Figure 1 (tube, rainbow, N blue to C red):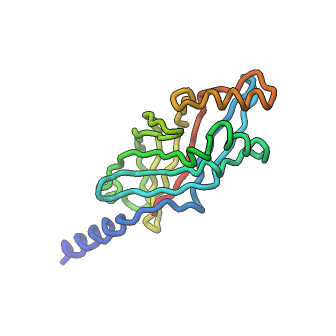
Figure 2 (cartoon, rainbow, N blue to C red):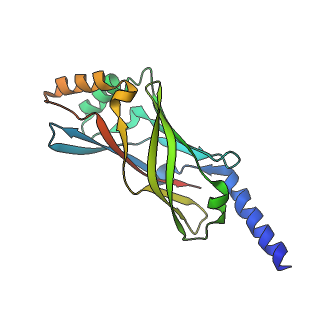
Length: 189
């Protein structure tokens, strides 16, 4: 009888994983812009979606680039127009493979250090990108995934250097770094 109960509990856990969707209200992705080699500003995006396909293990986070929040409205508009070119490229997507059986086996409250090796697709270009994250299984069965160190996005790989140059010129800056640290804290449930 105990074996049947354990098997049923495991089946219910795995079955619950069939619909792991990113909780948009409890998730955030941030990046830092460094200007003139001395001034850094944290920025974010207000539109994140995503999911984990529990059959294939494919995890995806989609960032609506029109939702950039820099704290300055004109800068948001300029970033949309000149940097991200959201009229042509409205979103960026990060994909990686996750070990679904390992997630299913986690106990409530358990944490696991994971190296996500994936790809970022932005501005029509795909480039490898890794993140060191901590995954925590919450009491409600959701998974909290949080970076423990930033991933670094090289704007040059995505053809964004001209857009950065335009922003630099408009703002009267000497430079804006082209290597951008990115962090996130997301909930999949």
